[in-house]
Image 1 (tube, rainbow, N blue to C red):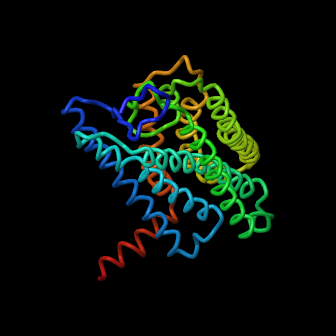
Image 2 (image 1 turned 30 degrees about the horizontal axis):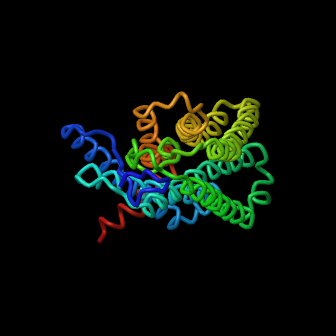
Image 3 (image 1 turned 90 degrees about the vertical axis):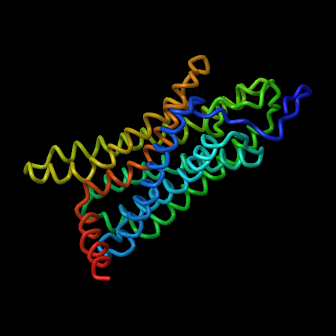
Length: 312
């Protein structure tokens, strides 16, 4: 399996989170619970948006996109973590690793852009309420969603093909629990400077630009809210943005730290902990945060889903 002539191994070994049986059992239980909550919460959110005609708005359209992203994003990584933690064989094929990296990068980037579009949607709703329906038309929303998915999946294909052109001759043991670019750069016996530059450029274009556009939207939103004379009106406006701000802060914080750090500051255990946040914790929290603070979503669950199941 080890390589000495510059070619790549057929399979990689994911070292995972821990080798201590007690902690392995805790990890399996924790990831399984998070995964089940992620699936049930996001599927429920999509169903609620579909069955309630009042929720057929741009905000909930993008919220449904976010839910689908979180389902796919978590499903790309968490099942493999569970299998590897419970199994003695922690290997993953070259193709399997490439596919996992491809979907992880694509879905993670798409989530960044969708969160930015959601911030713009809140900006239009609060700062330009009279023009909201005209600006956030169905055509624009569909184009923004389709453009986000298409661009991010093409960007991911570029980076994955660039990464797997490297010769991995130092080792086939990956000090991580899934296939991510930074740990793979450290396995290559070739200089990865160009790969890292490409990663930083993509991170700046997608993550930093998304972050600053979101920030600009919220600067305008907050300045508009502060001009509202009634305290009840200000509270209502802030409440519509609080959920989104919570998700944005958690997600961008971890992504920015992961992909825009100098190479010299690499710490395997810290990287694993941060990766858990944005691959398992954030997809689980998204539907909870949006549902807990949203009267329409909670009302639909109570009146249509719970009563319907009771009547049956």
